[in-house]
Length: 424
Image (cartoon, rainbow, N blue to C red):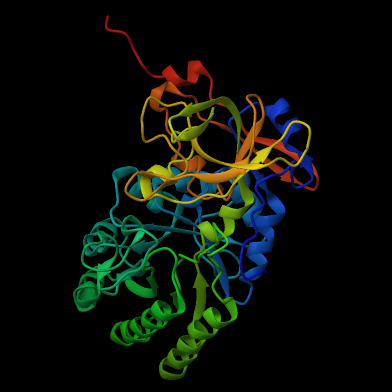
């Protein structure tokens, strides 16, 4: 695995297939995933006993099936994600290796989710004390994991920080004893602890998390047989960003695991829960340039994808690498441009910083009808898509073993209005 990302601003193919050919076959905007990148990132994490994919990052059932075939299990945060996991071939209960293939992780049960958990015997990672009582009322004697909020967090944006007292996520670390009492009332056994403090975890914060995990396991006691490192592994979106040192990352967690095994006197499984790390770099949003316009000192490339397709820039000010696909394959002089979409919103800009400040990007000179690729768009891309401005959801394509496979049809205009009714 490289230590940093490399991001050329001009390209012609994705995984060896011409981008122009992909656009001609599937139209634009379209998400294109390189299956080989997902498999490579899974391999990066094989030191852990179990890799559990946080499917909220990219939940197409073809992606889930690919992960399952690589012995990756799955996390579901909603009833819909449970249905996706089942459709992709995952099973409820425990498999022949004693592993929960699906774990439901959330801060609440809605009615559908609780029904599915009971029906399919799905293990629950409880993010609120009330969930223990709600599960116990339907299924006494269950085993559960607690998702803990250790009192601190971390994230590339305040909106992605999942720890600390301003976060709604997890069970406050001072409520462990209360949770033990609630569990005992229903004959429920706490067999796992999970901790996730947010995205972009670095090793300094990780050491804090490991220490908090050890302390929490001691408080719960020797019923614990699994600890989860959570997710948040960083991927580079620009040349200044880098990957975390995975050897050091694993070593910190493994050291904590061994300390606990020595104290508890039995083996403990060490899980990791990547989402973005598996999906982000595999994904590319292919879009067509539909206008090149001058606005005072700014040159705009306006494309047919908007924040209805990729919301991260407008939500978080996130940076995505961008490349231009020139029709003749030529190298062209770079110019400073602003890249925006078609939506009736001034905020529909892909080159912006947190707070909505528009920035410029140095990209090759381009013409109307040429293509532009928003890269590292596999995580929190299609899954956060919307129908704003009555735009259909984009198609999704996976490239595997040199072939492009349509894994989600472009939404039709009939689909847009499905379920709507005129007054009688």
